[in-house]
Length: 555
Image (cartoon, rainbow, N blue to C red; front, side, top):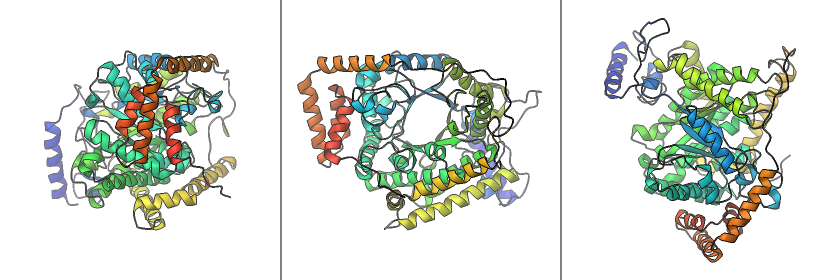
């Protein structure tokens, strides 16, 4: 790109920047030097077509002309433990301490679509997240938190749609118009088969539910994002950065193809897709990954799927620091790791961020550890001045080379996935890759390679295989009492006894008829939730229609 073209781009950027709202701030260095909102090359730069200006295709440098001068990222701390009342108290602490949004962690029975009193839930209730059995639990979870004013992310995929219905009903009972709701539901079933393994049914009925949800949200809740395509769990399972990026965006393309197959307008439904990435410890590689993600997504949405508007081409993403990088040895080192990873996410332009607590490798975070994690983000936001300049590393020879390299590796993986399919679509390739165990095999190979290097000392982790001498003392960790499970089951039994059983049965039967037909299932599922049908009852009714999925044995 020559100097004249670069200057024309700068003029377009300036016009957008001048029109946009900005935060009140001096935008100076700590020593008082004024800084520009963005920097570009002083003359010709052949790379600049791929780099561009913030807020302009291909969005390598961010979605908005202002960067964080317009609005900083949302501090969205992931939390959930015990019962809904206990987690509600933690949410109020997070919001009171300056958190900007909420993110719900569910316990294992909820993630698997089981009620707390299901025999398979024994010993797991409330231990890795909050237990949610019915709409009344969701009401308690957000008691005193106005759902029309706060954005909420819910990290759940298998039973995501009934959980969403409980969230909607909780909002109705608060008196909030459903159309005002804003937030994100994970709902990413592809990554469950690829990495996390928390599914209920075979892929096809899950995709049917996701398609119904996309239709419903596009029509009824336009600000709500019904899909958060998750690379986080793929990376935590052991993938490389390029694999995380490629598998995640491929899944996203699959959901685009799902929306198009439903006859939805891509410029209407694509803005409802968001992403969830891992911020790992390799600082510059992670920054490059985030920048490449925006560029790839914009190009594919425009050139392959026909999206015309900027918003439909935007890749919006939440980031969580790498849980797998935390160590039980010398756990206070985890504060440093988390800060480095959070800074990479910010310099990569994340839209929202969760920072892990130092003790999460051992247990759910204590309130003290959760506060340190929250303050980590606030120190970056308020003290470091990295929010003053959009994409401050843009143009760095190293960062741009890494961005190009990761992009090229991702494109090579996309080609492999499409070639596996029967019709050239990304969806067909993903389904074949799941069936053949290809994704799992690729991740396992990457994880094995990393572990081998770690054990040989080629990769070093402070406190684990180097610098192991320590004066540390045992941490006090959060322990969830077994009384939580007993009380949750007592309350659940009382709710079942108090409801109109005939109405609950009729609503579940209507939902089953909807599942057996071809219409949108969301209205019938909402009615079942309003009748106080439980999560386990809803999911079991659907298991009766669609069966369950068991992963084939592989050797």
